[in-house]
Image 1 (tube, rainbow, N blue to C red):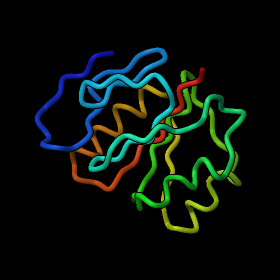
Image 2 (image 1 turned 45 degrees about the horizontal axis):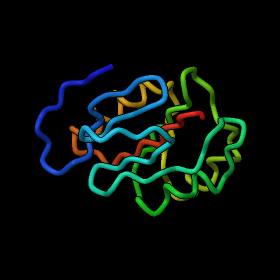
Image 3 (image 1 turned 180 degrees about the vertical axis):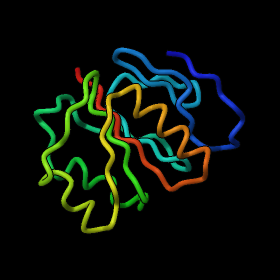
Image 4 (image 1 turned 30 degrees about the horizontal axis):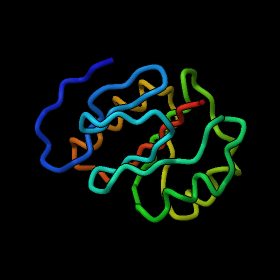
Length: 124
C-alpha cells in the first residue's frame, strides 16, 4: 500500500508498505526494522515470530518511547508476556497489531508528536 506523505520535516514517516517490505521516507527496507521519528531506521535482526527473544524487544529501551507499536507480520500474533516484560519495567507500553495496521498507527502517533517506536517484523 502506498501512503501519501505529508511534509513532516526530518521525521521518519512510513511512505509505503507491502508484502516483504516497508519504505521509510521513500527508502525501501526488506527486513525487520525499528523505526522512531527522529533517529536512523535500525535493522532489527528478527526473521520469524517464533524466534523472538526478550533481547529483541530490549533493543527498543534506549529510544525511550512511551509506546512500541509491534507489527507482528501478515497476521495478528501476540508476543508472550515474558518477551516484553522488560519494556513494562521501563514503563513502555506495547501495542500489537498486524503489519499494515502497525505502519498506519505509527504514522498517526508520530504525526501527533508522540514518542513512539515501531518494531516491524518482516519474516524472511
